[in-house]
Image (tube, rainbow, N blue to C red; front, side, top):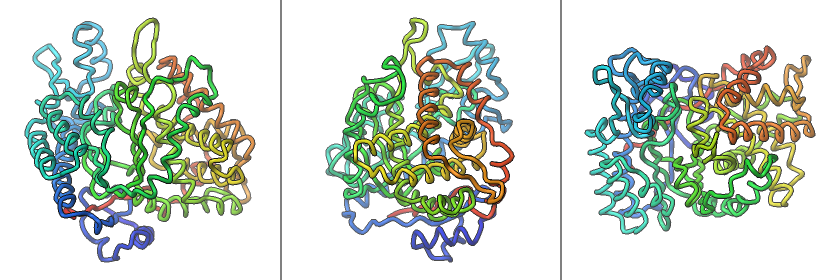
Length: 506
């Protein structure tokens, strides 16, 4: 483990952390060039009841980590793209051949909440509730205990139903209840969510947890944008047949500080926001909840994005990069996950974008949300909700963000999505490399047009469920050229990301 002292110190000062705290061992070993920091969160306002609930949720989050450790690494040690979700040594071709020969088993074997195991020549789907019963039993007991402690009716209902989900493997009702949380500063997402860890088929959900505390003032300031979701859908630069007006409009927005992570949330680059649930049935009924993790975002801005900007952009444009637009881009990235195709029809079959695009679905969705986030901020400028004169700040912050994410590498969903944006937008002239300054200059007019075109191209491929087309699209554009690689080589002293250390209790 190697932590970079100077950038880590910068992050520490951002969060009011003592230098001595940086020497504490993190929950997970920090990848090379990740800054290890001890996260601080304001908990003084919590009541004794809320504090007890949070501490129980922290323990439950740790059970998600125990499960994820099993999901991330194949049984028997020899790892592969299927990790712990599929039998050791199984290839994608072997799995797909088996599905073709046993179509009656496809639904169970492809289900998000099952692991695939061998029984002789057969493959069987084992529900998560069985495969991870010891950990889920402990987590359910902790949620039940927290439900008994809280007097908030909506939190009590969610925790009770999520405990039942851990035992039954049916998450629908608890996901619906999670959307209805209100009247409590405690915002917790806990369970199987994202499918990035399943690198073979991209269908199996990994367990994770976010234990956070909401900031009501900041949440209210951003909440106005959700009222525009339908208008944003209508404004997408595609034919109406690709637009989705069926999703629910509740879509609550929260700004929160994270006080504990678990499972997939602790793996790799740390997310600055989440947009859940992923169940398309819930999204069509109620929309999705967007939670911005303000303390994680602040750490990444001060310690990573801001110093990157001066190395990537010419000086006058680097000065335009701001935390305001990193926050807005993050929010509109998450709002954009709720826009565009979800449930689709392909060759007369009712299906979903995720099912059709398989292993490239998550990567395409992250690229879509990035560029569509910028497109929707431009739309809010047209609506006078955001100052149109600040368009250069948006483009500068967005471009610096592409380089921040591109450093994660093309094996990571957001990293490959960033490479796609770089290759596509550069081909449109959105930015050019200045060989003298060894930095990029953005052309605002071409950037606006490139963003529009990239949104349209991705959404059409998603709406068509065109797996081969999406793969070809990434193969064509998702590459960093020598200029980009040269600039990225100058960023080695800046952390690639952070490894947060959260408190054991509050």
